[in-house]
Image (cartoon, rainbow, N blue to C red; front, side, top):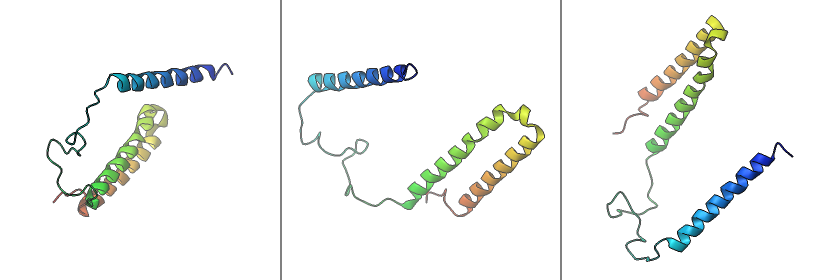
Amino acid sequence: MTTWFPVVVTLIVAGLVVGVMCTINMLVGPKRPSEIKGEAFECGNPPSGSAWGRFSVRFYLTAILFLVFDVEIIFLYPWAVEIRRLGMFGFVEALIFIAILAVGLIYAWQRGALDWD
């Protein structure tokens, strides 16, 4: 039980802070709703079109590519920390890993996944 006590205390304090902040916001915050404040906001411009419009798949593809390459690059950090202990074998493994990433990037680039036109 002693190992979980700090975790429980942290959760209780975090819950209290959130509750106090929300209560203060409800008590002190402005309460003058209007038609203009209720409208959707698009970077300072009046909304154009329906909010249920379809987006191009390219947005999602770019986001997924970013996440994939970002997560793959994170795998290089442990390798960089242990490079001396891994020696030449670890270095060659990292080069193969980077080469696979490069091939994936070149493939996505050739298929037009990174083009915005």
